[in-house]
Image 1 (spheres, helix red, strand yellow):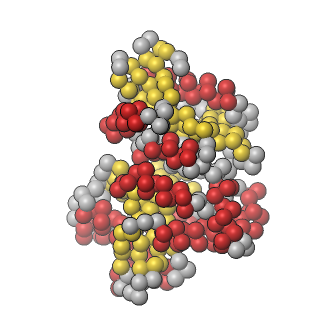
Image 2 (tube, one colour):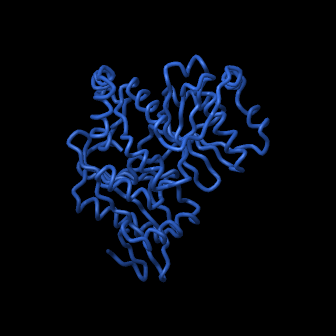
Length: 350
């Protein structure tokens, strides 16, 4: 790996506990690091999805001063890319200095060209390179959790608050699940109805195994104990990130989805957390409108690209018109077939 003065760049060996521990210790205290910079993603990306990982770290004066998690995703359907990080809403460089960030990005550029990828994608929250092409499709929604439960309820706009109260009136209850089983059943059925392939049950089990108590499943049930809605969340520092979710057909009438997010927010308040991160949505979609209805304001995400063998930023998402027929066909597949085939497709999307 290259050297700049006494600054060197190395590749994480996820099978060496001492390197993983040093990486995570840096990430835990780095202000611009996120849950998706944790070393556990190297293991998940490599073992669950089978992608080559290049988790780069910078060292200076004997100390770790920056990280850049990367994965190589090469697909005949969706292209050949080096990304930080697939399946993550945030990524890119987390560093203690501009010099460390520059060294990591320079090594990522060299690596991308050596691998022969069509593009390099860095999923930064803040804009870093004004001259790099930008994906302007996504925004994130973040909001402080207020110090009183009643204040959090009253901060929800009136119409949305009425839906939460409807869920309460309907006698819904929320439960922390010991495994991902009820969540996966609701999630897989939900994404199938929307015409998109599901991630594998193995992936969700791996998240729980690798990140332990920082991954939690909350499931909402009807008064007769039928699971209606479920969410898998990440906990990071003083934040909660509801990341994957699924709902039964009956959830809408019962207001179970609305009640679910209120219960997650209420429990986060009880834990003393400070930020509710509603996550990424595509501009102009139903999830985007839903989060706006909760009183959250969108913040643009800055997904920056270096293009090597293509002329424009890729659009591998359901909003792309060329996938419309595929989406409609997917909806007609039997659910067991979709659940078997989906992970083989979605692993290349990221």
